[in-house]
Image 1 (cartoon, rainbow, N blue to C red):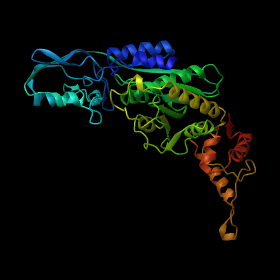
Image 2: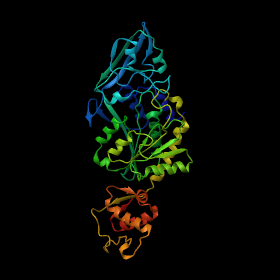
Image 3: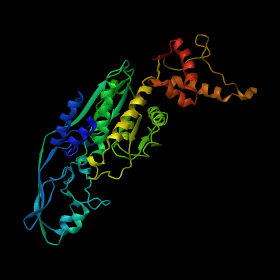
Length: 428
């Protein structure tokens, strides 16, 4: 059994609600796989309206009829709604049903009721049950007990960095939360960890950072508290989701279609003759990518969405395929190896230079229509490149600039080298 499948088997059953004893166990477990640094934020903290919930664990959760237990919420991590309030009392069938949530797709499955994690100030009690169970309830009275333990806890975020020759960084993110399921969150985590285990055995030009935050809230806390100097060196971001099923790979672009990491992944997919599709931003999945983008970091994603087991108890170890996990690792490793060879462009001046000045001699003259001069298409593209260089706000790659101006990378690099020879740029 591979390390990836072992981790999935060990962690899938845990109730990995973002602040819980099982999430603490998950953090400890993953820190034995890689030497992560753990960032902690205390329960009750408020950042941008995101309030970290208390540490929450279920001690007992049962439904009884005539004194006999007919449903035990401890049998599966999804069986009690996340952050359920405690409750004890007797109800009739219709009142009980108001607190029972079921999957409308599969009559024998549990669904994932997650929203209370993000609204800890307004919580109800409840169970997730199969629709078959919901439909089978007879009229009469039911006794319900939900006993939980709530205490001060932490929102933990894991970070591991492989330093390269340059400080410019590619960030890869996946989510270790989501209770009781394998593909949603956890499969991306195991792929990311295996990828970094393999990356650390080779020399790297760029720095690579792995971030494992609880979904949405963890990402916002991580980025909202990230030191500016560590944020400014990020070249690109990539989120890894749901990579364990047999469904085809789905490559989602960053919001900026000129962001290049998706191109390298697509090249690797084509070279390996993999089955995949490529879509624009938010056309495959809407997840933490939008948070990374809101903090100014272009972020693509690789997933296997859609897959039929999503947000259900069918998302379990039996749906995982080692070959699917390995395929994702292999493709990503190939893409990163190519990306790592990209030449980086770093601007060393401010303002707008008089490029026609003989000191620089970098001016591109596409001609003037009023003088009867008709510029060639490539001349117009070179002029666009010339105008683009002074507006560069942070280091970028030759490949990205070439894509933006629709010129061959070799042509762009030749022109940029002239700037570098004048001390205006660095090509790394």
